[in-house]
Image (tube, rainbow, N blue to C red; front, side, top):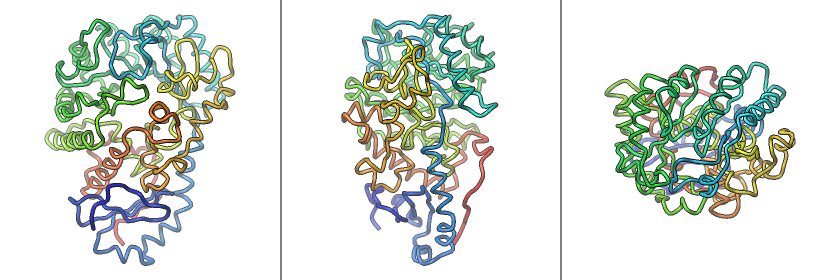
Length: 459
């Protein structure tokens, strides 16, 4: 059987090649329920001919459908991406926030920031189950430009929220690092390469200077801290260095990283978009290297964006990120607050005025969640997107990202930028499953609190 270029299927159970390197296996996938099985090719007839596998699947099909429905429709907001300032000390070439905002925008005052968190505390107290603590991620632009207000807010609301901060790292000093570590704040750093010559190509200050050496200094001082990650935005400029990047991050004992394809929401970022074929080649090589490093040292480097795809296949309800599902998490699992209090379904939409839906200081949050901008994102269905509606892996991918799709195509009811990259990731996951290698790519204890709905090791 020849390898197909797409996972196009239609409804019902479909046979799908994994790749030519695993000639013994073929995938059996139900697009509707996100059910899958790996079947040896010499057992295909038995598998499809009223086998124990099919009988057990049909008995469980309703359960699978309900799980997918819950994941797609029943979750409530429990996190906020909070921009305490519009401004950034960097002028990254691919940023999804408009240049004018990053250069000339405003800080939220400390008083207004505390007021906003008080409003969010009241909202979550009424909307979440008792005992569940919501998450606030100070995001950007660069939140540390408004450091005094952010740190004051963290201390004042330490019992009410689980805090994180996403920063380019250039403004952190030793005292700041100790402040964040002592309070167990989740830290996300941005670094696009293993050496300055690569990392600083598109990430520079307004006067053209790179900051990667400072970020590496921060990483050195975070060694041993388990609650941080490094995000690498992958573009044409650095895609060929992904293997070097994971080697560097593993050597620095970074616990978690993300190798995120550049978001193409705004026009300026699209000229740095790699082709799907090229980025997939280097990305999968990097994932291979992650496994080799784990075998050699016994120490994991979790690539979180890939781990989420992997978990989305083997245990959908345990996924941590909500980009790879339709509808995505925007507006239904989280929302974004801008520096003047405007509310958006996600930070990716902050540069798109159409998706401003209200203001935290003027409008009731519950009412804002029901507005047209939020509803359009929450009601986005992959079944309404072509050719995704005919794709067997549509619930492993979700056609991300709606903001990117709108920016590129003028409609969120279209695909984003990296369809084939997702196809290759899914095939890679099935190869890992066939080779029993999945645990090397996942957080320790990732399955704590989960339960098994379906288990069958042979026909």
